[in-house]
Structure formats: structure tokens, C-alpha cells
Length: 244
Image (cartoon, rainbow, N blue to C red):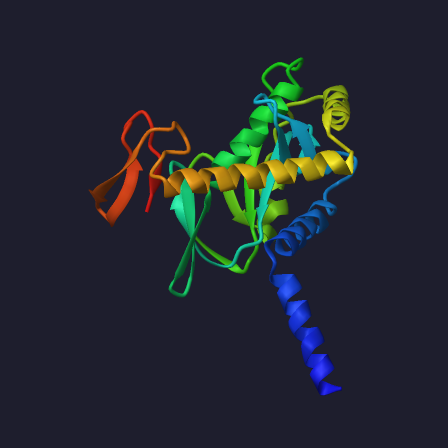
């Protein structure tokens, strides 16, 4: 009986440790916080998949439309040290001696905002605000000035600090309707989006392994910098892609 119990516990730990499950947990945590907002003023849209200008699709964790602006929220349920600044293409997660690179979430959210701007092109100069929300399991050691990079527990406080009314009630309603109309509801379309992302990541990793820049297809060459040896694109400074 004890053996069976241990097997079940190990299975649960493995499942909860998977990136997909951790991502879902992070998004649910943010959804719980957002549901505390005044529903008369704030309209919450979760897990959107919308067309992008590249002909592909983009997945957005949360969008909050209000008279005070449109808040686009990217959630990261990471732990450990999180290192980076808004200009770097990749940030670093450090857990003890293990380091993992992940795409700069500020840049990721910028792509989300550009996709929303395309969907809402009939509106003039909409006020978008980017928020990247990390769980409290992370220790943020990032340098940012033009975006909000916060812990999930500070999400409501961050949104509520925007007090200036920038959109009227009709605009808010029309924006919500336009986003909902553009969002792909079909499960097959969402699966295709996830598959496309995985294929793109695999293609980029394959290019890097061949010393090819995944950003501009230039050659990756070894360089020396302030923090040691790294590989960078031969087309620098036009292309600033690096692999540490």
C-alpha cells in the first residue's frame, strides 16, 4: 500500500513540475486576482489566440480593457533568480548552479500589443500598458524603466494606480467586442498555435547549433565581452542576437 502511495505522489510531482501545468497554474493565479477588479469598469479577457501581422497567431494570457487603458498581461510562473533588462533578447533563470535562457517577456508582450493594435486598427492611438507578472517564487533581479515587471500579488495595485480616464464607455465596449470577435475560439486553432511555437523554437535551436543566427540568418561568431566568451551575430550592430 505504501509503495502505491509513493508512486502516486511521484506521479503528481512530475505532473505539477511540467512547464505546461506550471503555466496554467500561473495564469489561474492571475485570473483569480483580476476577478477582484470592479466588473463595472474592468473587462477581463483570458487566454486569447488572435491573428498576428506575420500571418501566424499569437497567444495572450490576459487583457484588461478599462476606461483607464488596455492592460496586456504576460504571466510567468518561474522560480529562482530572474536576471535581465528590457534591452536584452533573452533573460536568465538561475536555480542554484543551473541557468536557463528564456525570451525577454517584455519583448514578448510588445508583440502581443502589436497584434492587438492590428486587430483594433479602426481605433486611433489606443493607450496600451504592458505588465509582466511573475509568481512570488521568483526573485526578480531585473532592470526595467518603460514597462511594469511585477509580482502577481502586486497586480491589482499596479492596475489601480492608473487613474486617468482615457477611454469612454462606448469605446471600452467596442474594443472588448472587437477583441472577442478576432479571438480564435476553436480548440484546433489553439493547438495549431502551440505546435507552430514549438516548431519555431526547434528551428531556432537547430540554427544556433549550426552557428546560424535565428534572427537574421547571419553567421554566429565567438566573441569576448565583459562577462566572458559568447557567440554573437556577425551582422552586429544591425543584429544584436547573442548566445552566452
